[in-house]
Image (cartoon, rainbow, N blue to C red; front, top):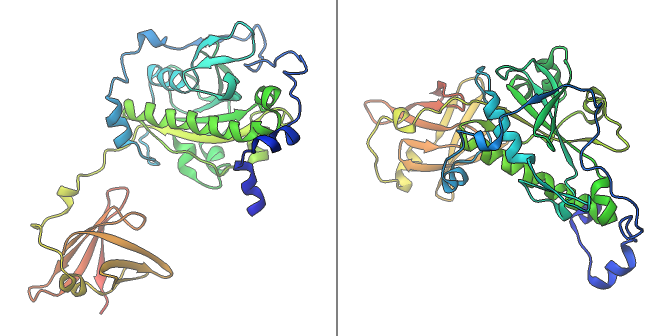
Length: 349
């Protein structure tokens, strides 16, 4: 485990001179192509040009504050403009360097080497056939590659059974072409490629937020099977990250879920809520270090108190409220889950 951490290290100047070899750039080797080739007679699909975008005008601070991972999508398709906006925001080409040694894009990249390619599994985009596509960033167009049989199920299973991935209208699939960066940075390249990937993915998050779409980075996937599905030459190119994209359901406001006036939280009021409740399994509420904790088996989570009968959860639930008998004893807990469904936990003791 600790050996793998060295991937994140850099070098002191003395060590750098000893360890880092001469690069192909220093050896005067011609630079690599900064876009994967495709047949010249391939028909390309026009995307909406950046100057024609009518979307994505949200204030930047709003995007940063509201950005979050979203895994639940509606069945509504994306528009071609929305897809064009996301592609331009994550890998759009602004300038190819005259030397041919790099590309300036809408995202930074170490040495302008841009080692990433964007593939898309499209299920539902207005005007496009479902299938596998590649973003031809130099001309801001799409290349249709092939249809994928049972794409939703296939992509869900290839994401370690995260079936919501396959159900998204569009799945961004980034591949790395390491030699683009290795040509200059040799053994330093792989850390830089990982940094580049994180930047691109964050741009996707913010671009989605700007047009009321949701996404989430997916690092669990069947490497060999996905590379094979995309017909990649894995000696030179392979999948490194997925990100499903779709329209998300607006969550219910918690003020609609909470029904009672706020009260001051005290240790006495927290103690009153201790107890065991049942549904499919036993749920226990206990007080630890003046915090109300939900315990399910070995799992524990501290709940953030809003008042003595309303709490915000994280992993266990969006929110929960306690309801009481006329005598003032806890009777049941009503839970609001991530899908905005309410269910009850009955008091077991």
